[in-house]
Image (tube, rainbow, N blue to C red; front, side):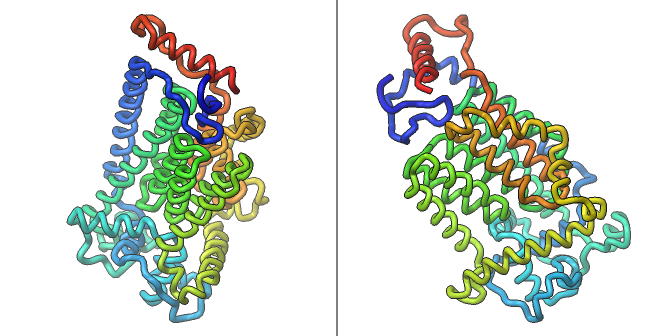
Length: 427
């Protein structure tokens, strides 16, 4: 086959262009039909969750809405940073507002605050006032609603609908990546597993950053598959990886996996470029890191990491059964029966051929299993969905063959068959 050598997953191994085969219009139509069906199912499912009346009030909604009121900014605490003190937690309403600005900046990277501060203004749904009181955990839902301890319903619903849109786009990108890497049918199965996962509802019922994280992780997968080990790929995945880390710190696993992949493919300069760009984006998006000036940037990065470590330990108090359990037990809880398939992903031949879709999944699944210490269902969705995506990409037998009866007679079908046969021989 002319041009650079291909694999079934990532196209040219060296990232150089090759002579494109003649496109099969029937295959393209088949792909578009599957994509439309998946987008329809995802849209109906996710928007239905966003519209459910029993999910319009959540104990964290008011805290998140307070975050969106102000743009992210540099801030310093007015009292000692005793992260283990309950009164110092965001949302408890006992620390000074300036301290909450500081803690919110450390507690979650700032991308979602930028996004929803702007979208709420543009949509005209920006809350003019917010209740001074926060959610009272000593009373039930009805009492908190009657006493006004909730965010503005219109703004809360808007944020949930936008988060549903982020999830729909994430499913579309996962489909597009696997349709190119493996086959359209593989993309459909991976997307449907994501949409139908029982933990999707729990992931979406809060207006937290998880849907935005999913969108950026899926964008990283798509760009990784489409661009491969190229300068353009290093730039684009580097930027998206920095944004993923700015949505939630565990999003940094996207750029960690990509840089590791580039190093193993003997492209260290591309890995360095992607890593530097990701760090630059993360720093620019989070002005809290400049609270002590440019020279204080390393100290603020350490402060952010220290806060997350202590905060995770405090969250475990909400799971007393797991607080007393060995650390290794939590990953088994998160994966359940899927644990038996983790070794299957690790020994996949396509993983060790450095196929992007499989490497992306292995990095995120194994990285989260190693780092997550809280038995939250939303982490179950994340780990299981990327694991299944990796297994599909790693073990799908071949590209989808459009039945011969669907094809027009002539060169396009023959050319497509020859192209795929050559691709399989080159692996």
